[in-house]
Length: 575
Image (cartoon, rainbow, N blue to C red; front, side, top):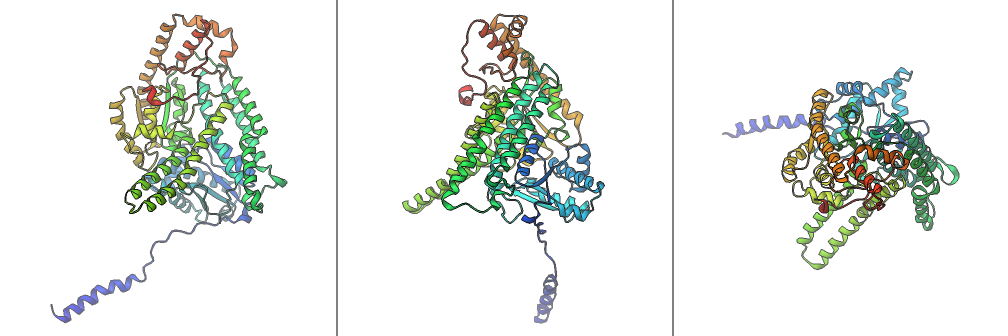
């Protein structure tokens, strides 16, 4: 090739380079700013969790001086609205949450507010994270849906899960000690009330009594959270982190007083005592034979109680089952354990190649400095969960130990793998089966959820190792309601058969008839209290079978109360 030809080729190749200088590359859209001075006239909108958690969280926001509203109930209407404005192929939580937000904003338009005023007076508060699933794309999809619906300037405020308490302090939201403890207490109590609600309602004698009592208790807790968050020195409703900082010597003492007041104060204990007495007044019939269904899976799918999971909670109860819900606290302690476990593996890898003993010790010390606060936070959460559930009668299920879940899942799903529920679904399936706490494990997840698909593949090997495990995976979407419910009905048939067999075996063991046991219980009202502690039995899952054995022992004069419901046992001892 001649020099002239080379020059021509060079000129042709360089022309696109010169043109590319004018190309505008993608830039992340700027996030709307929520200034501190806007708190008095700006409303925070949030939602997407269970209605109990949203309700109590609203009280905490209001106590901190914020104006807030929760999203409308996620029904079929909001699902279709979300699908219309969101990207195709997204998770169910995106469609339901985005649809609820758009329905809320359209309601404001019907009330007479214009779009500019709505964008100025309202902000949307959501959780954000990253990882190997579509959860990291939720925030972007919400923004796209808002823009497509004509609310391009509407502000979305993210709470970064990976950052923990280290959030962006330049936002209008402030995460002070009172606000943090209020949210902490709201999540704990909502989990416990939810567990008790589904544990008691299938056995209620007076229809509707359980719903009435628990709504009354939640209103009582709501009033307490509003009062305890606003009852600071001076009575100010300004978020605590905006208030003048105390002197350095008194900062830790003030934090200690705030923790004691929120978690152990006399007002709080009195409210819990009132709720316990109210719940214990519910009359139940524990002789009803009902299989226990443990719900696991993706967070939104097993938390929501509506079309987001085919109304699975009400459907299971209509089919004669007792629902065993999964608490948010299990996911929170998992995140703490996962961070600590990842640090341990990273430290072991680095220490293995450390050239000197001094560097090895320095790396180990750095690991323990990071791990100890995480360990303490996990233990503190479990401690307060146990403390609150004991104050509410002690019959709510305890949180599983994360180390046990990781150990049980390790042969099938490595605990270091991230995304979605990670190893939790596998670990919980084995854990609650070995502990004899459920007949059926039902895993709910959005259609096409990648981390859940990995867990489903692993469950084949798990069921070969544990043939007593009855497991059903159900992907949820806005369609296929009849097919999903029919699959659950087929799995429930086997669970019902197991429950009936246990009751018959319990009656044979006691040598008494069911009528004889009923007459004994009817003459003693304490056995019909909702919070009466029924001992756990190693060989029986069905609550009716456990109650039959317990009543028979009382009729024989055995008053021993060991192994009371609510106590935990090691899975290895049960397996």
